[in-house]
Length: 329
Image (cartoon, rainbow, N blue to C red):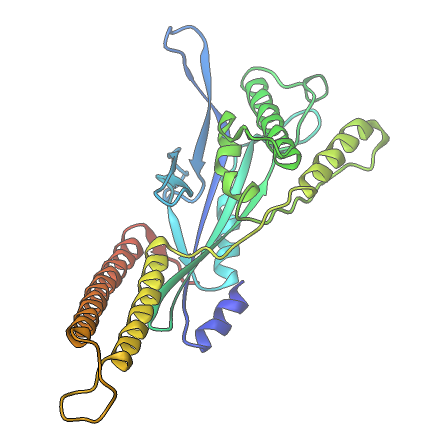
């Protein structure tokens, strides 16, 4: 990714990379009745500043372009692969882990490390913004309570981990079977990964299995799970901003109208005093009126295109300065 960014920079294309790191875990709080604990599925920012890392929870929402966004998550701008890997190591140290009978440092959460690449360029005098997002997901392994010996809060975490994996499996099955309904909203894990599973994306799953005979059932289940994910078929397209698409459409319309103006000018009758075939009465004023009308439309579209370009530039400036932090190694 970063080698490609450097190559594009040499060609004069401006590219920015931002990273974020979150985990989806079970948060235990006193219940409203005051009896026992209430366990909820939460999204926590692993790169929130502070020592120790504060429990800053994020909310999942959908933006105007239909993309899944996380409000309340810090995004860090990076320039090299080393800076991205340093942030990955920093966030991994803050993940929720605990010891069980099967693992001394068992992950108690699903983690998502995302890299967003935004490319700004000008093609045929039209400003264009292209975006791509890589989401690297570390899924906590499913566990049998009898073997892990989970109790109390660990038991609630194991239940939520298994529930998230179950819903993810349902979503993958629905995508491969061509179902009209995909249960993305049944868990925060599938909700966040909605854009990475269906639609404009490519999905790859790496399965970690045990060579032990005692874990043969879990190994087979994991391999079937990954094989199902391999069957997902999508048709990725270029992620181009809606404003850029509108500018391109306006430019195409301007070109078409200018071509019509040229054709109308060629078809217009010759001026008085110039030899030429006789024209029908009223043909000259009619054609001149058509040309003037087309020229007016061209001027109006050019003004609208200019206004959209200015709004797009202002929007880039605001988004670049409010939610990102630069990290330099």
